[in-house]
Length: 213
Ligand SMILES: Nc1ncnc2c1ncn2[C@@H]1O[C@H](COP(=O)(O)OP(=O)(O)O)[C@@H](O)[C@H]1O
Ligand SMILES: Nc1ccn([C@@H]2O[C@H](COP(=O)(O)OP(=O)(O)O)[C@@H](O)[C@H]2O)c(=O)n1
Image (cartoon, rainbow, N blue to C red):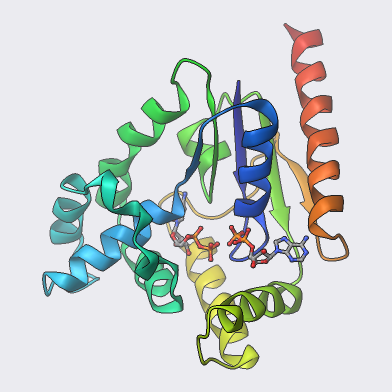
């Protein structure tokens, strides 16, 4: 069983993906971490983020064991990720790992920007999770403030808007809802309510797929 969860920055897709994975007993991959780690490694080697060829080499050499690095959770890492994520060669270098993760013995839950459109177009269920930019900025602000990061809510909103714009308008695997994905707007939902809504939508998608098959 493969479940694809896409959406813009701080929409809550990672929170949902983790809980959905536990619910179904599936492994979970936060694919944003792959791009964040490529940005981190490129910067550490003094590579310009607009150097597609060098960034793709970094992506090919990525050590998956380094994805639990807390430094990947910063706003700067998100921005660097979005810059390297524009390069088709970077995306190609990360494709095989994501597909093989998805197609493990049990299947998997993956969250990102292009899971339903590019990585797993045949996923059994696809969710596109969103919320207003203001709500997303407030949630990310609270998250960062809770970790002691000094940043204003306005700066977080600006970062989110800039990243969404870049992710949605790039040529390679842009952030877009797959035609067969179901939309889940969490603007007015608590985490628990969003989780229950997500499960209902996934169950409905599975039973549609069952009827079709
Ligand atoms: N429905 C919700 N209501 C309130 N806060 C939420 C909700 N969903 C997620 N959050 C919080 O918002 C922040 C961003 O969520 P996250 O799952 O990391 O988003 P994404 O993976 O889309 O970037 C986290 O601190 C998370 O706990
Ligand atoms: N499948 C994915 C996942 C992330 N990304 C890129 O990586 C950046 C960071 O993704 P993320 O999911 O960790 O970011 P948040 O939504 O958690 O803020 C995004 O802004 C995208 O540019 C992508 O292009 N494709």
